Image (cartoon, rainbow, N blue to C red; front, side, top):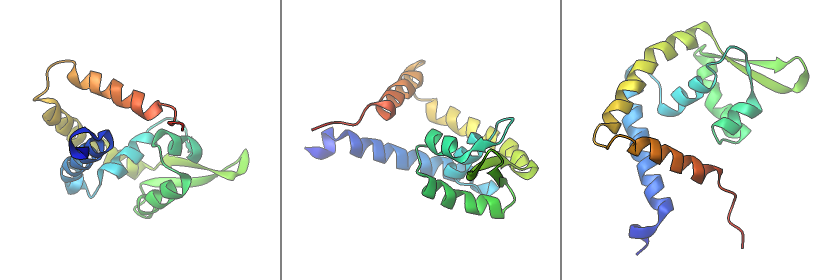
Length: 142
């Protein structure tokens, strides 16, 4: 039966559950897990090209732009034109974004520890490796 063997169904259910758990943990900071991931992707010494961030987060640029808008309105991220390519945008955390990320990171760590607690040592690293393989696998062909 599909519900027993469908990898996609089980991945989606697990992803939704994890998203809810992290959303609940980050709610006191008025952040979602998706926003946290986006802020973390910008936690680097130099502004990041939008294309690189979209690739890292496996998002198209239109979806990334929509996700950035509320963070930009809150003053957490800055979006600037790339001086070397006027068609491209560079993304960076603002000082307020850095402060919020510093508050959120311990919540994220604590939540991760709680999620991983019931698993045997090494299980989660193995799972992360398997998920990475799935996300990087070439598309199936007819």
